[in-house]
Image (cartoon, rainbow, N blue to C red):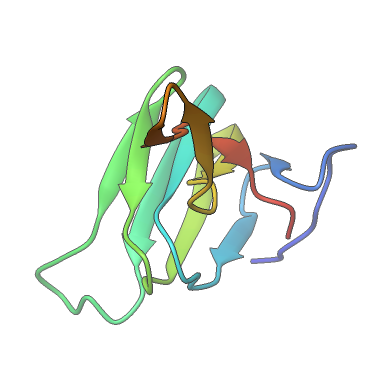
Length: 107
């Protein structure tokens, strides 16, 4: 298996057959979205009983903070990695409220 970035965007990958992508752990929640094809995900260190997930185009899977994953196209897939934004606040009418918009993860 190889791990090659094959897209013009740093948060998007095209996985050809027999190509794997290691998604390293991060300090906050992320989402892996399949935009084309089908992908198999497995959580590193989950052991025999855990972590395998199958996703088709249009589906996504939450990657908890601190978790490392491996993705493989089955037989091929296009993936996008989204990351929860840093906690920012907007001030309006004396109230503080968090802005919640997913942002692309720049690896």
